[in-house]
Length: 227
Image (cartoon, rainbow, N blue to C red; front, top):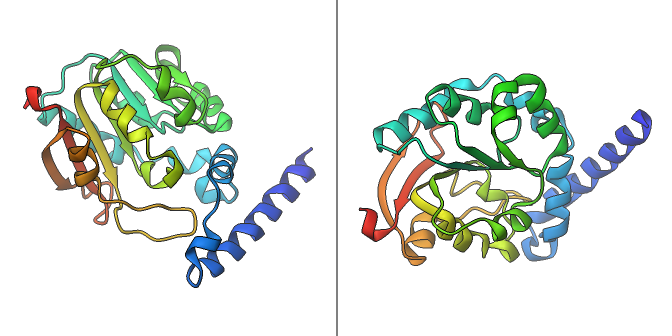
């Protein structure tokens, strides 16, 4: 089984390396399908995308918590899109948020969460599935905070309808932290202010979080009546 997994990952890595080389010349032909993007993140190859790579980055999660506190986000329901091993959920729990939910496509990351952050794992409702499958059944205007960091750039163009549901389920603040310019065969950078303002929200804050990285923009949105 171990050998089979290594072979599968090696083949997948080689395939994406070829796509990456082609991407610069023929982006449309090289663009992976929605299904292949989801499959990639369910079991990503390479150590940089393994759950263990996300453990010792607490300063990034703490920066998100500080921003939420500065924006006076109530300590009510929170939804993280792309929680990986649950490091950020644990940080929010440590600072008084206890109604936690998340969406995470990688089953290995979810399993690792129970091992590394058992408090958050016990409390949080983790939807171990693609965001396209999870968010459609979530209630309207339910979460005081919906947030995502370095995840939305992996949303395939065919799945951009997910952004409408992010707006729909947000009661309070929608926080997205993304690199809006990074190019790759499996990344889909976007300008998020016009996207979410086009869906009826108002941007209330924009900044660089140094702990996250100088190329990432943190944008916070609210419904007009909450501004």
